[in-house]
Length: 206
Length: 211
Image (cartoon, rainbow over all chains, first blue to last red; front, side, top):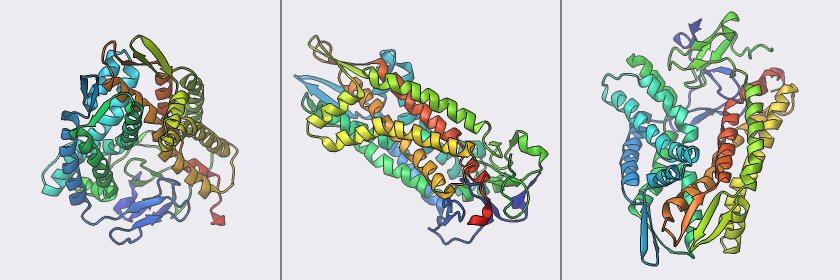
């Protein structure tokens, strides 16, 4: 077994497994598979720097979103405040371990891991520092992708607000706004991520 | 088993994580090989893709019944108890004039899981029957299935937020009911089913001459 890339720049389509010689694509453009129509890759100028900047912003927003109250709820003088994690805790206390774990994974663990792993992989590449375990870390960014569902959670918030509207006073907290900003920030970080470039840089650093 | 597509000659396998293309020998096809770049497992095709997808789809189909039949939450207010199923939640939103949200929740919770199971099943069947029918469209269909599945989580999140907010002792408390567990199971099972299906199988039956 030999690695093809040592001698010819072959790229494969993830969707249909056809193999082509890597086409030249201008920055900001993308290549589409001729056979199945799936996207082969996107070229981004300064992908490491751009994604890193977005990941740093996302990390700050992540802290704000998890520390400050999310929503405040007031009914006849009694008020409760909730943070992002308190829903998970409330489910856990009711004995709903599976649902609690699922919500924790999809709204806290997966997005936070994606952000932290991106920082862990990209910062050393940008600063040209030595790194350890970058390949494993970057692999997990990809593994967490389908389980990160913050945008769905946001729709859930809207629905919950409508359901409680008649019952009580609901006030959005600082964390909610951080969360609203966090969704496009993390989405941009991943959209501007040219994984092929990062993989090559990781390989070079080995 | 059909041979892999011979584009640019030679047998190859591609890493599903970092998309590195490696040339391979026939003997190495069935072996467990680590990717030299990212360290992940390389499979020429995902192992037991069709069997796994079927198993997960059937499990999701079974869970779908109690997910809709049982209540997903119970509201207790001044001793008065009321249970909500997914459908009654949609009806509530509709009656309270938020029909755009009612529509979103109905599509996300009721239509999407069913659609996902039907579409994935038909993709699996088409591969098992070695169908030649419009592979490009079937490939696109698979990518759509991958994208829409996550939206079914909306109802699980609504329950979570309501439980977290409304715990005011006797005045109002909201508790999760078993329907939510089955519903969460449907979402996870269909997500795993979509992940275990290998879209490259669609193309293994296709002669490359027709495009």
